[in-house]
Length: 291
Image (tube, rainbow, N blue to C red; front, side, top):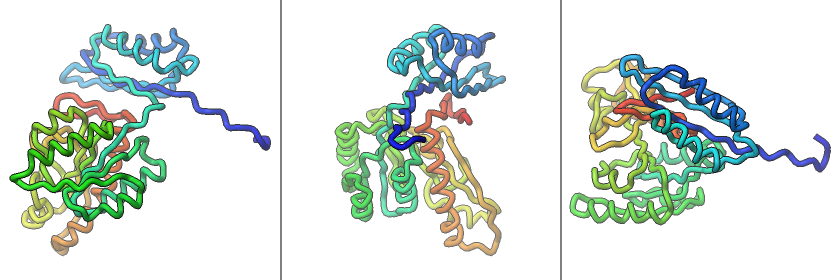
């Protein structure tokens, strides 16, 4: 590139996720709609649940003249005319993320480092802790930290405070980075946004507390970690990502915990990244995760 020549700014792109009853010609109709409006498809992927008869698609395109807002509104109307559930996101928008933490710091540091390195297409705008331990580290990353203690007697008031913070910071996604509290149904309904949790087992095995101790007592040969959306049913939300490690009788509980931390970091980061890249489509209690 010649000296003094500016790098051309990247055109905004749109990503649409749609799903609904399968019918002939859906792929062609979506592609045709984008072509007729002068758009350029960058990537498209689709899946059909043959048992349920449901069609799923993720399509990414450059709108003509970079007019993302007009295409967003028009595509939503077009998708609904096909009988599809539709969600459209723009590359210009960076999702505002809050991290909920307790004392364990491995997932927290991993997410913050990836975010600071530009590996997560969102903005970490708030850290909420039910213990104050991670406050200095959050400040080091330049993110506001708010300590909201939670006890059985103060849970309702604490969650009301948390919800007020989420509104104040315009948070769109909550990530439970080893937050050792169960969010109430009322919290999830009032937040009305996605909440991603990391559970330190290969769900549905060993749900609930102390899963590594449960795994050790059971003498399993595999341990795992699961990134999933939080729902009113504890550890039963739609699964986004999982990983496993092989273990033997020689491994202690402490070994399982240490090995599990490595999995927890990578599984949670991958789940959050896929969500932020608009690659996850939830239906029922399942997900389709597009390449």
